[in-house]
Image (cartoon, rainbow over all chains, first blue to last red; front, side, top):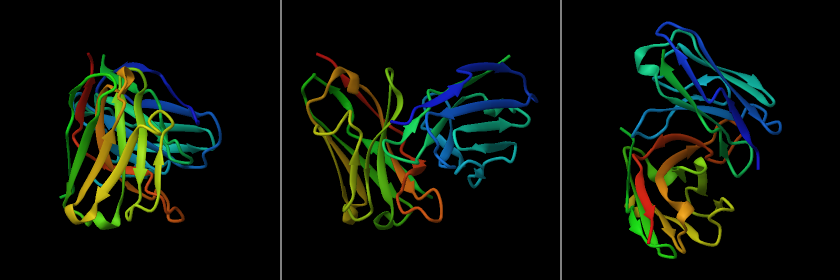
Length: 107
Length: 125
């Protein structure tokens, strides 16, 4: 199975900060990586698909980049509603797997 | 508006069975692949099963293969997960998720663009 290793597992940041979350795949997955946001008690929400494509309705402060095995989710200017947990996921080959998540907390 | 409503969770003893349902609305269910994803304390988010739009292709994660059965009824706009021989580590929140191809050349609905609200499965004696 492809392992998706996310880092950091948690971070503290302030409103307005630039935040970067990384995800490393255990093998090359071309650009079949996607990013989700999850708030407590709710389902994950798709933010970015196929490495760098913004899902409809998602603010442009979210962006994705990377290729091969290393991928990044960036929030250019953190807003109060962005405090949540973020997950990466690969859909290159089954079983499709997720990272363990990065919890973004208020500093 | 796309809506997926998960139901059927509850408390079950180890070795027991449960059937989850997912009611879809707001899109042409017949034309979309569907998935089940669960979130457990032990493994976090875990994809567990996929079914294509006409039920001709089905996949399972090894952790549930031989115990869980995915199915769908396109006439009822519904997705199901029959869970048998449940174990302690199956406990968690189960989500149905619509699957779309992540790239133009893809044909498999492996990108989860809409999710149900989840249904909680508790396995305990």
